[in-house]
Image (tube, rainbow, N blue to C red; front, top):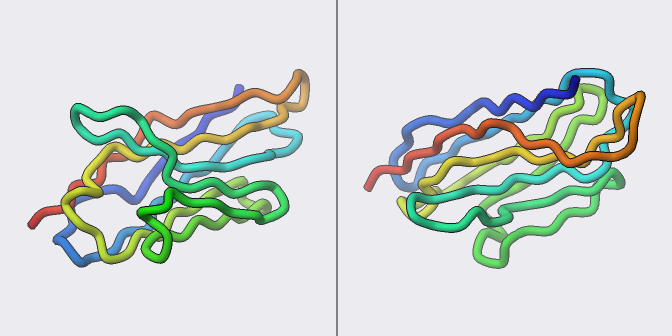
Length: 120
């Protein structure tokens, strides 16, 4: 079985920073795209950032310059560095990975989410 576990969420004041991590475990052959999504209260889940297996990235336009996504393939881990946080960034942040397991085809996986709360 494949599992994703996020960590690093919490309460932070506006203007502060957090670094989220998401580690995949299980019978993994390879990981293609890694991504972060978020869902604010009463809002739809939205893409925050995405990184391909080759290291190409894209971001939500409003987050460029504040958020940085990176990956450590040796650790099957994706990171999201979040700077200059605002209350509008308050959301549950979800990790998503397209993973090729060792015994079947590529599948999208989700973590259970980590809550980020930004106070005024």
